[in-house]
Amino acid sequence: MSVDPASNPTTSQFALLRLRRFAPFYVTQLLGAFNDNVYKNALVALIAFAAVRSSSMNDGLLINLSAGLFILPFFLFSAFCGQVADKYEKSALIRRIKLAEIGIMLCGVVAFYFQSVPMLIGVLFLMGTQSAFFGPIKYGIMPQHLNESELTGGNGLVELGTFLAILLGTIAGTQLIAKANDGTIVPVSLVLMIVAVAGYLASRFIPIAPAADPSLRLRFNPLAETVNLVRTTAAQRVIFQSILAISWFWFMGATYLAQFPVYARDVLGGSVDVFTVLLGTFSVGIALGSVLCERLSHGRVEIGLVPFGAIGLTLFGLDLVFATPAIPLGKELGMLAFTQAPGALRVLLDIFFVGLFGGFYIVPLYALIQKTCAPERLSRTIACNNIMNALFMVASAVVVLALLALGASIAQIFLAMAIMNALVALYIFRQVPEFFMRFLIWLLIHTLYRVTQRGMHNIPDSGPIIIAPNHVSFVDALILGGCIKRPVRFVMYHKIYKIPVLNFIFRTAGAIPIAGQREDKQLYDQAFQAMQQALDDGDLLCIFPEGEITRDGEMNPFKPGIVRLLEARPVSVVPVALQGLWGSFFSRKGGPAFFKMPRRLFARIGINVGESIPAELVSLADLQGRVQCLRGDQR
Image (tube, rainbow, N blue to C red):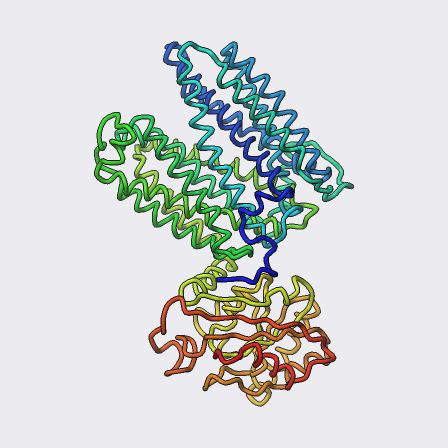
């Protein structure tokens, strides 16, 4: 799909990396995520090596204790952190947090010097606290510096950076300790301090982000405020279901990542290098899926990608189970030997695609929360998301331990994840049918058609407005709804409204069925009342003035219903022309719609949008002439 430049502030999400309103923040959060993972994995490696030297040390207990202490601050402090992020200017908060990181890393260096495991674990708790404060600011500041059309791309870049930081931080933290045979901690200390200082310096260039709710009264009561925050957020149905969907992703992600070391060693027969390959493949998959979201959504917050991601997670999760070998592929296989082993490539591809579809799944959800949440509550909403994420990650560990206690293999754990993902997806999409409705629309305009858009900037981002397109096929509303960035209320002939499958989409989108006065006067009057109410509510209303789908490819005379509506609610009208749909599977050319073979996949169609017309200047003849001019000879 191509979009006219006027409708998109940046031509590519990577262009954001050249802008001061995004680049310093991006570098700051990237370096912070990298430092977190360097420290955590250096600590894990140090504990493991110390356990080898001391038979009295239980490395498994200490490693799990470390993981728990890193997550604990999200339960204790997230509600308060969200309040702070909403109350104060965010760029100053980020600078203070990065200064705190320098102090925490100094403590970490001292702990590494003395190789004091209790001190190291205590520093990890402080890092978790710092992350709990940064999270609500991280996602709360983005809508203040990015346009709505840049949110998906911005979130994609953030997820790209986060998972690459996890990968590189894991490798660096492990290797810096593993290679320090003489016990020196200079390399890891230098990395931690240099990255912390670099993060603070980058934060100094973040533009000001004014306080969202400066009058907010801070309350520090971990249990009561956490319960209150979750209850308040749960009242916002779409937002809370999005949070649950994100949290489920972290449940799955934590499960996969926790199993990879043993999976690589015992199931695949690989060395530590094979674990690194699995982790890298998974991380690169998520990173690539995250940045591809912007291209697939074309500058809008496209929640239709969420079901697409959920389907991919299930299918490739299932195939990973079938691809898992019954016996190890070897013993202590290196990276090259593993990739050459029979069946290894299929395992890697499945892991890559699980990550890829995970990116498709999670990025639109973050963007949706940022778009729909009230600005003055966004940071607290993100704090609620962090609490739920932490809860689900803890639940992941409990569920996996229970499955292992019951004798489940890792392949069976992967099978359970795939099946549970399908069930969770069905639950969420039933609770919020808008996700599946948008998926069907997205699927339509990315399989049968390639859409060229012109003049989309003529449709205002807010306020009551009427668009008036020609009517060529049964899917005109779906194509327009899939391309226009704000929600559209469609007025359509009641028999089209009732078509199976399409009815689910139209009903979920709030379409208004209408009949002719002679056919059903009551339905006609109800439709006009609904249209007037929609305009009173500030909605974008789409009326097909022809009143029916063309039977010969030419436009029918416009009917006076739109003029009657304008007399009651005088709003501007935007003429719109659809091109290239005549002769398609959904048009009446060459036989009844739906009962002929599609002409071709990825057919080129167009949407041309003209300049708005003030209500007092609208006439049927002029409006039809403008639509005809915009359509041209392309039926």
